[in-house]
Image (cartoon, rainbow, N blue to C red; front, side, top):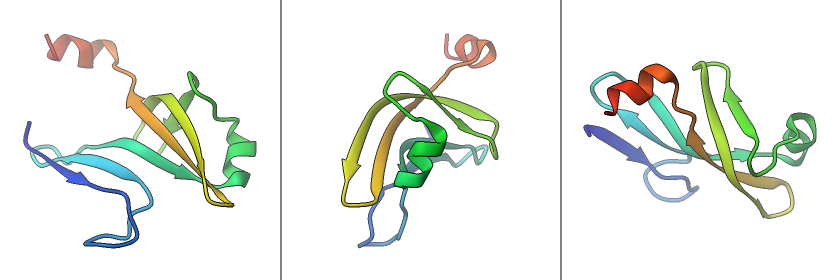
Length: 91
């Protein structure tokens, strides 16, 4: 519940390409929107219903929507895949 929301955008307080929440208690980052280039899309083969892996944080996300914006950018709308441990703590 104690989180900080970082909105995607090139104007305002941040220049973030991605949109995410950060837990103020544990420091964990959870993506909501991830920006990818055309090259990334070809290499990663991202599609709605697929999986996006954040290897640096050892987290998996389900891709709920892929939106093309501009000439060289795609937005992946993602939701965390809950592991068994995460599902048990939410009960």
